[in-house]
Image 1 (spheres, chains in turn brown, green):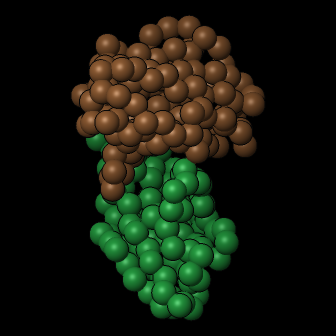
Image 2: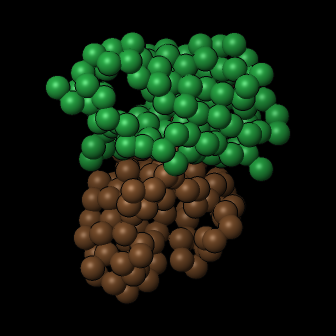
Image 3: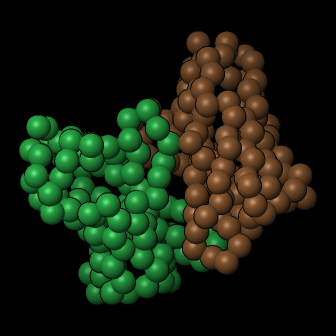
Amino acid sequence: SAVISQKPSRDICQRGTSLTIQCQVDSQVTMMFWYRQQPGQSLTLIATANQGSEATYESGFVIDKFPISRPNLTFSTLTVSNMSPEDSSIYLCSVVGTGGYGYTFGSGTRLTVV
Amino acid sequence: GDSVTQMEGPVTLSEEAFLTINCTYTATGYPSLFWYVQYPGEGLQLLLKATKADDKGSNKGFEATYRKETTSFHLEKGSVQVSDSAVYFCALREGYQKVTFGTGTKLQVIP
């Protein structure tokens, strides 16, 4: 299965600033997703990162707050903009490889906003 | 839409006890089913999966059988260890769509 490198692994940020999280995969993948896991909660899908076009956002998430890029089949970024303490979460990149059911998660970025 | 319901935790067991974590799902088609595990301070790892009815996924002594008639995918282990302490998420996916997760069940195994 694909191996995902997600950076940074953790960060502490000031409110009002932005943080960009990178997701690098060691092979070309069909689908890339960004999830959020708020403290003590399950995972919620933020958006599907589409190669060469705008990301597809889930209800409750907007591009201005969570801009996403996916310039090729192995790389994507998620930016958390104008952060507030409510954005403190773990953010995870996930991919589906070519050939179907393999579904891999990155190790996550633990974000704390102060 | 798709949904996953799993038993609330925390579940506290003594070492070598039998574990069952219940999971049921609702889906419009024929999903693939997964169990993910999240150890303290770590990311999410795929524990096991099943892609069609009656399939049994297994890994590290854990098992789960895809039961279409009861729309269930219960996680079991015959003898848990302290190192199994983690949060377990049941999940489903239809085709190449997003994964839908349950709320997670925290397992604590005491010596």
